[in-house]
Length: 169
Image 1 (cartoon, rainbow, N blue to C red):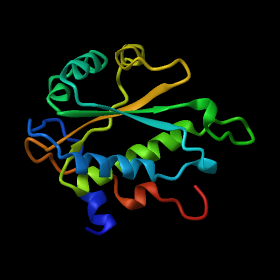
Image 2 (tube, rainbow, N blue to C red):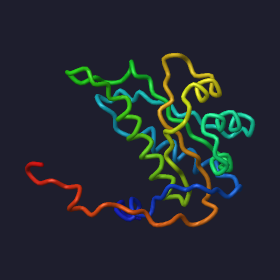
Image 3 (cartoon, one colour):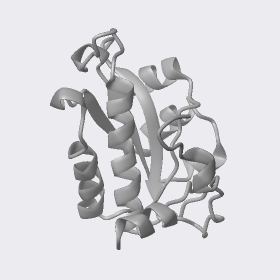
């Protein structure tokens, strides 16, 4: 599929079929995240893959939604801020790097017919405890991963002329 088609078909999925995701597809999705670019090639990310039903229940306490708990896999993207590149004004790029990696994951998943939904509205401390994260590691985002139970509605986006500025604001 051409990239623009892939970007257009990717949706936030909020309902998952219980069938298992083949391991080779999961590994390909994770490989896409691993290959993402990062500032100064620091790669300050880690991917915590949660498949065990008991661990998924603990993770779901950090984001208690029925649809979320229905996914067979959860990928939690974590970052190590001290490993990330910093701009001259001190801005740390771990969140940007992590976002690029998660975007690679969600787009690759869509290419395989898998559903994802970017989640940042979780309770970080509950997630940290559920995954036994070390203090220097921060959970940044997570996504359920699985086959969609239905077809999500088309996405609504602003027209190009509303978001592109030429030469100046």
